Length: 333
Image (cartoon, rainbow, N blue to C red; front, side, top):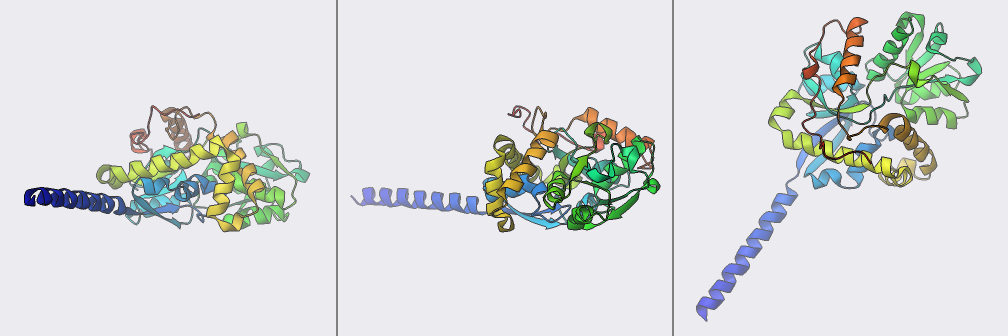
């Protein structure tokens, strides 16, 4: 009897210890600082916000802290300096910074299309990039990669940055100045296009075929993080792509989730749905494997940046990206 009781006690103790260790392991999430090129509550960052709201990062045992930097290039510089392991910027960004010795690369790209759109005031009858000559236009900042995509678009049309009056206006001013008729055009993300429209401005989009084929938003990681913390990088990539997958599957439901996460957007679900549909149609569309970086497209972007003098040194293609954290068996639905 004593032996039986002892055995039961031992079994209960073992189970209790096992459960305790399991709960402790589950509770030990890793704190991760993730830099974004603009304030984290913008719809442009919906994949990240939705992933946070729906617990996708927590499921990877990651406690994500999102902090705004001053554009995509600044994000890369901060990561390269060791101030964060991960961050967000356009997929072009490593081309710009790697040439200057900053050790970051893209580990996922959110879509097969470019995220930069050029919107014009319809009353100005601007039909092409060439028509921007002598006009005033806004960008978020001179250190954001959408600015470099604009410069590449101008060069593609035979113009230089001196042919256009480009004003850095911040993440709010970029569309507010445009919608207030203080600029004839704007280069930015789909969020700001919808913002300008809803402010009452009738806009016309420059055809995407005329805009430089830059990359969509990407997840950047330092070489150190890729080498020494691959589980953290993989977890962040997979959770973020799940947030993107939710937007593609149901933009309306994603809008509701986003509004719950960012109360300032409560009641603005219709606007959010418009923005998300623009992303799905123009940016996320046609990516066979979610998150996978297309080396051929990245190479074309790299060659253009180098040939046009946007970067003065030619970084190696293999130093700009890795697809090692992408689940190549998971095709976009």
